[in-house]
Length: 173
Image 1 (tube, rainbow, N blue to C red):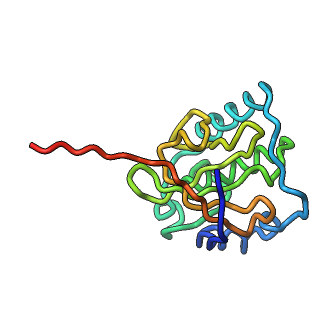
Image 2 (cartoon, rainbow, N blue to C red; image 1 turned 30 degrees about the horizontal axis):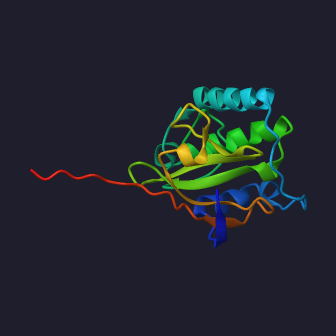
């Protein structure tokens, strides 16, 4: 995944950083990628599936009465950001480096905003998603990638150069 210029942080993430400032502090570590072996791969798959099962999908409007609010799931419910934040938290608690666990904003197949977790590995970037059970290479996901957290500072964001070609066929009657 190629990242480029600085991008604005999503409004929900800005609010999250105000509520949980320690989660958005640069730790001064050099950004790393995770060396993936079969145990690490199995752990990614298991955590993605476990969090997807544990959280019930509910919109922020239904849960919090606002359009956009990012937080950790507390009542077993949330939208895509709560899934991502929980996966990030669980992986980090198991020793995965935060600089390799990046919240990523995409446009889904309906052109709606959606969040996934990008995991930077020595085999390439993969995504954990609440809408897709499989852990996929980013380029295999049916999304247009927009921006993601900086690997060096979780409060900063970078634009993604998603140059994959998508084609649309049309038939005339």
